[in-house]
Image (cartoon, rainbow, N blue to C red):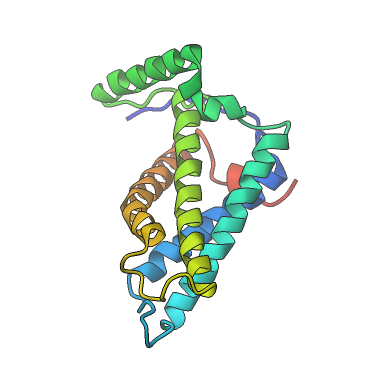
Length: 202
Protein backbone atom coordinates (compact mmCIF):
# COMPACT_ATOMS: atom_id res chain seq x y z
CA UNK A 1 0.00 0.00 0.00
CA UNK A 2 1.46 3.36 -0.98
CA UNK A 3 0.49 6.90 -0.21
CA UNK A 4 1.80 10.06 -1.84
CA UNK A 5 3.49 12.57 0.40
CA UNK A 6 1.30 15.58 -0.24
CA UNK A 7 0.69 17.59 2.90
CA UNK A 8 -0.59 21.05 3.75
CA UNK A 9 1.52 23.37 5.91
CA UNK A 10 2.17 22.27 9.50
CA UNK A 11 0.31 25.32 10.83
CA UNK A 12 -2.79 24.65 8.71
CA UNK A 13 -5.00 24.34 11.80
CA UNK A 14 -5.36 27.30 14.15
CA UNK A 15 -4.54 26.69 17.81
CA UNK A 16 -8.20 27.27 18.79
CA UNK A 17 -9.31 24.57 16.36
CA UNK A 18 -6.76 22.09 17.69
CA UNK A 19 -7.72 22.74 21.34
CA UNK A 20 -11.45 22.39 20.74
CA UNK A 21 -10.92 19.33 18.52
CA UNK A 22 -8.88 17.69 21.29
CA UNK A 23 -11.46 18.57 23.94
CA UNK A 24 -14.34 17.21 21.88
CA UNK A 25 -12.47 14.04 20.92
CA UNK A 26 -11.35 13.27 24.48
CA UNK A 27 -14.75 13.95 26.04
CA UNK A 28 -16.45 11.73 23.43
CA UNK A 29 -13.92 8.95 24.11
CA UNK A 30 -14.65 9.18 27.85
CA UNK A 31 -18.36 9.02 27.07
CA UNK A 32 -18.01 5.91 24.95
CA UNK A 33 -15.70 4.15 27.40
CA UNK A 34 -17.88 4.80 30.45
CA UNK A 35 -21.05 3.79 28.59
CA UNK A 36 -19.75 0.23 28.33
CA UNK A 37 -19.63 -0.48 32.09
CA UNK A 38 -21.56 2.24 33.92
CA UNK A 39 -24.76 1.70 35.88
CA UNK A 40 -27.28 4.29 34.75
CA UNK A 41 -29.96 6.05 36.80
CA UNK A 42 -33.32 4.67 37.85
CA UNK A 43 -36.24 5.90 39.90
CA UNK A 44 -34.37 4.87 43.06
CA UNK A 45 -30.73 5.50 42.08
CA UNK A 46 -28.82 8.42 40.57
CA UNK A 47 -26.39 6.08 38.85
CA UNK A 48 -22.88 5.05 39.83
CA UNK A 49 -19.63 7.06 39.70
CA UNK A 50 -18.96 6.05 36.10
CA UNK A 51 -22.37 7.36 35.12
CA UNK A 52 -21.57 10.68 36.79
CA UNK A 53 -18.32 10.81 34.80
CA UNK A 54 -20.34 9.97 31.69
CA UNK A 55 -22.82 12.75 32.44
CA UNK A 56 -20.27 15.49 33.01
CA UNK A 57 -18.04 14.44 30.13
CA UNK A 58 -21.20 14.67 28.03
CA UNK A 59 -21.75 18.25 29.15
CA UNK A 60 -18.09 18.92 28.30
CA UNK A 61 -18.67 17.41 24.84
CA UNK A 62 -21.70 19.63 24.37
CA UNK A 63 -19.66 22.70 25.30
CA UNK A 64 -16.80 21.78 22.98
CA UNK A 65 -19.23 21.05 20.14
CA UNK A 66 -20.77 24.51 20.36
CA UNK A 67 -17.30 26.07 20.63
CA UNK A 68 -16.33 24.17 17.48
CA UNK A 69 -19.31 25.63 15.61
CA UNK A 70 -18.43 29.12 16.85
CA UNK A 71 -14.82 28.76 15.74
CA UNK A 72 -15.96 27.38 12.40
CA UNK A 73 -18.13 30.45 11.87
CA UNK A 74 -15.40 32.99 12.62
CA UNK A 75 -12.01 31.38 11.89
CA UNK A 76 -9.88 32.53 8.98
CA UNK A 77 -7.65 29.44 8.79
CA UNK A 78 -8.54 25.81 8.12
CA UNK A 79 -11.10 24.02 5.97
CA UNK A 80 -13.83 26.27 4.61
CA UNK A 81 -17.22 25.64 6.22
CA UNK A 82 -18.84 25.16 2.81
CA UNK A 83 -16.38 22.33 2.09
CA UNK A 84 -17.42 20.54 5.29
CA UNK A 85 -21.05 20.55 4.17
CA UNK A 86 -21.00 20.23 0.35
CA UNK A 87 -24.56 18.96 0.07
CA UNK A 88 -26.07 22.36 -0.79
CA UNK A 89 -23.86 23.08 -3.80
CA UNK A 90 -24.06 21.13 -7.07
CA UNK A 91 -20.41 21.94 -7.80
CA UNK A 92 -19.24 20.69 -4.41
CA UNK A 93 -21.45 17.60 -4.61
CA UNK A 94 -19.92 16.73 -7.96
CA UNK A 95 -16.41 17.25 -6.56
CA UNK A 96 -17.30 14.99 -3.62
CA UNK A 97 -18.57 12.21 -5.91
CA UNK A 98 -15.48 12.47 -8.10
CA UNK A 99 -13.16 12.33 -5.09
CA UNK A 100 -15.07 9.38 -3.61
CA UNK A 101 -14.90 7.55 -6.95
CA UNK A 102 -11.17 8.19 -7.13
CA UNK A 103 -10.68 6.81 -3.62
CA UNK A 104 -12.66 3.66 -4.45
CA UNK A 105 -10.84 3.05 -7.73
CA UNK A 106 -7.43 3.59 -6.17
CA UNK A 107 -8.35 1.47 -3.14
CA UNK A 108 -9.29 -1.44 -5.40
CA UNK A 109 -5.71 -1.45 -6.68
CA UNK A 110 -4.36 -1.84 -3.14
CA UNK A 111 -3.19 1.74 -2.79
CA UNK A 112 -4.43 4.90 -1.11
CA UNK A 113 -4.92 8.12 -3.05
CA UNK A 114 -2.62 11.07 -2.41
CA UNK A 115 -3.57 12.55 0.96
CA UNK A 116 -5.34 15.89 0.73
CA UNK A 117 -6.59 17.31 4.02
CA UNK A 118 -8.77 19.81 2.17
CA UNK A 119 -10.05 17.31 -0.40
CA UNK A 120 -13.83 17.05 -0.95
CA UNK A 121 -14.15 13.57 0.59
CA UNK A 122 -12.01 14.26 3.67
CA UNK A 123 -13.75 17.58 4.27
CA UNK A 124 -17.24 16.07 3.95
CA UNK A 125 -16.34 13.23 6.33
CA UNK A 126 -15.11 15.78 8.90
CA UNK A 127 -18.35 17.72 8.49
CA UNK A 128 -20.46 14.61 9.00
CA UNK A 129 -18.41 13.80 12.08
CA UNK A 130 -19.05 17.23 13.55
CA UNK A 131 -22.79 16.87 12.91
CA UNK A 132 -22.81 13.40 14.47
CA UNK A 133 -20.88 14.41 17.59
CA UNK A 134 -23.07 17.50 18.00
CA UNK A 135 -26.27 15.45 17.71
CA UNK A 136 -24.92 12.96 20.25
CA UNK A 137 -24.00 15.72 22.71
CA UNK A 138 -27.25 17.65 22.24
CA UNK A 139 -29.46 14.59 22.69
CA UNK A 140 -27.62 13.58 25.86
CA UNK A 141 -27.69 17.14 27.17
CA UNK A 142 -31.40 17.39 26.45
CA UNK A 143 -32.08 14.23 28.43
CA UNK A 144 -30.00 15.54 31.35
CA UNK A 145 -31.90 18.84 31.37
CA UNK A 146 -35.24 16.99 31.24
CA UNK A 147 -34.24 15.02 34.35
CA UNK A 148 -32.81 18.03 36.21
CA UNK A 149 -35.93 20.11 35.57
CA UNK A 150 -38.28 17.30 36.58
CA UNK A 151 -39.89 16.94 33.15
CA UNK A 152 -39.18 13.20 33.14
CA UNK A 153 -38.01 10.62 35.66
CA UNK A 154 -34.36 9.54 35.73
CA UNK A 155 -35.37 6.26 34.12
CA UNK A 156 -34.34 6.69 30.45
CA UNK A 157 -37.05 4.42 29.01
CA UNK A 158 -39.57 6.47 27.08
CA UNK A 159 -37.35 9.52 26.61
CA UNK A 160 -37.12 10.56 22.95
CA UNK A 161 -33.84 12.37 23.59
CA UNK A 162 -32.31 9.27 25.17
CA UNK A 163 -33.60 7.06 22.36
CA UNK A 164 -31.82 9.29 19.86
CA UNK A 165 -28.71 9.38 22.05
CA UNK A 166 -28.52 5.57 22.28
CA UNK A 167 -29.34 5.18 18.60
CA UNK A 168 -26.43 7.42 17.59
CA UNK A 169 -23.94 5.63 19.84
CA UNK A 170 -23.08 2.88 17.33
CA UNK A 171 -22.57 5.46 14.57
CA UNK A 172 -20.20 7.37 16.85
CA UNK A 173 -18.22 4.17 17.48
CA UNK A 174 -17.97 3.52 13.73
CA UNK A 175 -16.88 7.08 13.02
CA UNK A 176 -14.36 7.15 15.85
CA UNK A 177 -12.75 3.85 14.86
CA UNK A 178 -12.66 4.78 11.17
CA UNK A 179 -11.41 8.31 11.77
CA UNK A 180 -8.74 7.27 14.25
CA UNK A 181 -7.73 4.36 12.05
CA UNK A 182 -7.19 6.54 8.98
CA UNK A 183 -5.36 9.13 11.06
CA UNK A 184 -3.03 6.41 12.32
CA UNK A 185 -2.37 5.16 8.78
CA UNK A 186 -1.57 8.68 7.58
CA UNK A 187 0.67 9.20 10.59
CA UNK A 188 2.79 6.10 10.00
CA UNK A 189 2.99 6.74 6.25
CA UNK A 190 4.25 10.21 7.17
CA UNK A 191 1.63 11.93 5.03
CA UNK A 192 -0.12 13.63 7.97
CA UNK A 193 1.59 13.40 11.39
CA UNK A 194 -0.80 13.30 14.33
CA UNK A 195 1.11 16.18 15.91
CA UNK A 196 -0.33 18.49 13.28
CA UNK A 197 -3.73 18.36 14.94
CA UNK A 198 -2.75 17.41 18.50
CA UNK A 199 0.16 19.70 19.28
CA UNK A 200 -0.76 22.63 21.53
CA UNK A 201 1.96 25.03 20.43
CA UNK A 202 0.70 27.99 18.31
